[in-house]
Amino acid sequence: MNQPIFLEPVFQERIWGGTKLQQLFGYEIPNDRTGECWAISAHPNGQSVVKSGPYQGLKLGELWNSHKELFRSDSAVFPLLTKILDASDDLSVQVHPDDEYAGKHENGELGKTECWYIVDAEPGAVIIYGHEAKSKEQLVQMIEDGEWNDLLTQVPVKAGDFFYVPSGTIHALGKGIVVLETQQSSDTTYRVYDYDRRDKDGNLRDLHLEKAIDVTSIPQAYEPVQYSSKESDGLSVTTFVSNSFFTVEKWNVTGTANVPANEKYTICSVIEGQGKLSVEDQEYSLAKGDHFILPVDFGPFQIEGELMLIISREGE
Image (cartoon, rainbow, N blue to C red):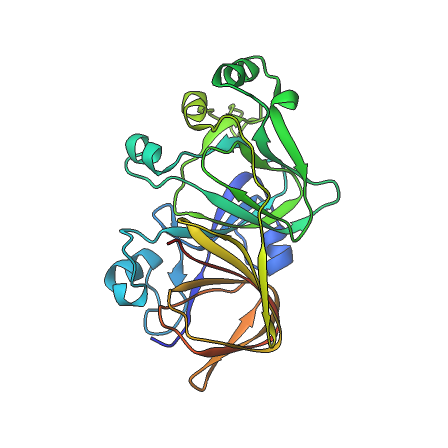
C-alpha cells in the first residue's frame, strides 16, 4: 500500500492539563484540562482512528490485527505510542516498570520506556530526571522522610532538547512544558509523589510506593544522549536514539526532499510547518499537528515544504 495512513488523535483530560494543544497545534480539545493527545495509539485506553482512505474508521489496533502486511512485525500488539503532552502544571513524580515486571504485575501489559522531545518550554522550566539515592535503603528513607528536594534531580529544559527515559527512571515533567513523547504502548505508571495534590473531588491521588520502590533503578546515572546527523538535499535527519524499543529521529525539511522506500513501517508527526508528501503522482497535504504511518516498503516519496517531523520506528 503506497498511501500514508493518517490518524485522528484521542485526547485525555488530566489534572495538570491545559489548552496548549489547541494553542500550538489547533486541535479541538474537549476542555481546558486537556493534558494528553494520544496521536498514534493502539492501546485499549485510547485508540487512534484512521481518518481516510481504504481503512477509514478502523481503530489502529483493528488495523494492526487485520492487516499485518502493512506492518510486517513480530510484535503481538502495536508496540509504540506517540503522545503530545501539555504540562500546564507539574506532573506527578513517577516511575515505570520494565517488560518483565509489568508482565508479572500488570496483567501482561508492556513495560514503559519512553523519550521526550521538548516542543515548547516556558522560561525557567525544569524536569525531574533521576534521583540522588545511593541505595534502596536510602531511597526508602528519603521517601518516608519527604526529602524531595534532596532526593529528586532537577534539570532545566528548553525547546529542542531530547531526553531518553528508560524504565526504572524516576521522572516528571514540570510546569510550562509541551513534549512529544515516544513510548512503549503501555499505560502503567507508579506515582512516587504528587505534591499532596487533590483531585476534583477533594481526594489525595493514589501513590504506588511499594511498586515504585521495586522498579526504581539504583543508582541512576545517565550517559549523555549521543546524537548523529546526516544531510541530503532538502533533508536533515538527527537520530536521537536507536535501541531494542524504538528508533526516534527528527527530520527537518527545507525545500524538496527525496526519500527512498522504507524497509519498516514508519510513524510520523508534524510538529512545525506545512508542506506536502508526494508518492506515485498522488499528493497529500501535511500541516503541524498531523500524524500518520507510512506502511512497510512505502515509497520512494518526496516531501516538499518547510517542516519539522518526529519520526519513530519499532525497535530491532
